[in-house]
Image (cartoon, rainbow, N blue to C red; front, top):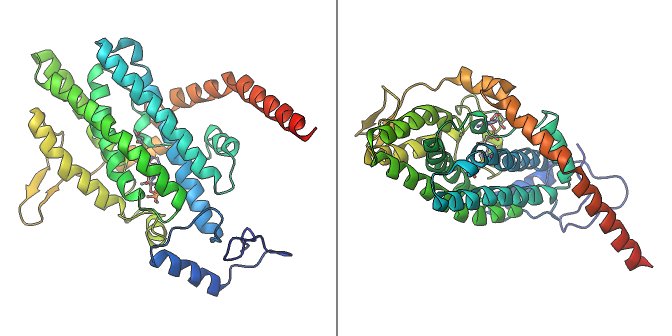
Length: 330
Ligand code: 3HC
């Protein structure tokens, strides 16, 4: 296996790139074990770089695709205040995506390549965004549940061993907290409203609860990347650990809202201090990952159209950059 030809100090090595020797790999793991941050110019195993590009680019894709379900409600928000809050959230998500593409580019993969991998179906985005936002309560449920799950997953990523990703997460998590609170406030307003509003809130919880649990990924026994990602301290907790944390925090919130979590097997275990919960429909999860969710086709068609519609902007920016560089060189 070849490295990108950088020595331990990050200087380009001359001649044929060195093979990843056991000593080099051991030295790298020792840096990880010592809680050192790996920076873009540092030597890293190709597999470390590849799994980071995989995860960071898919994270970025999720932020951008995630704008669609909420964006569809900007013109239908019930008040100007709600419209302004939702507009701010959707704009934040776009910024999160660009931030994460930037972090991905530090690993030597271009944004064009990351986006091409998404549009070709090679790269994934989070399963959760393949579900429809049918009522205004869904916008509340997305903020409350989806952004809460995102926070649960992203706070540990602030301590990720790869410096640019960890630092991107710090800013993103600050904005996610506002996203979660505005969603919870929508659910609180509805759950304190008339019967129709209460029903709308319960219906949204019924449809978003299980897909939110799936956001954390397959069970630990089925997760193909977790073990290595945890050894490299990309992940600090396993999928199941974060899922359990989310359930333990969110069930009391649902009770405060006067809503019922749609899981007949949910019960608090006094001994463990955790909620026991029912079996996740993994067939549904893998069906959505395979492209057969309720909105996969629509989400990807919209993303492809946005990419095509934006081609002129990219060409203009390249032409301007080329002319600017030529003028500078002249
Ligand atoms: N949706 C889509 N694909 C998923 C998934 C999900 N919910 N959960 C897992 N997968 C995929 C993985 O990407 C992997 O496929 P790949 O090899 O093609 O990449 C496969 O299923 C096996 O899963 P693993 O558990 O082995 O994969 P990971 O170790 O990468 O764990 C993860 C999956 C927990 C999603 C991890 O990648 C991660 O923490 N990513 C960063 C956070 C993220 O991407 N969140 C997405 C939501 S962003 C968001 O909600 C924005 C907010 O502002 C609303």
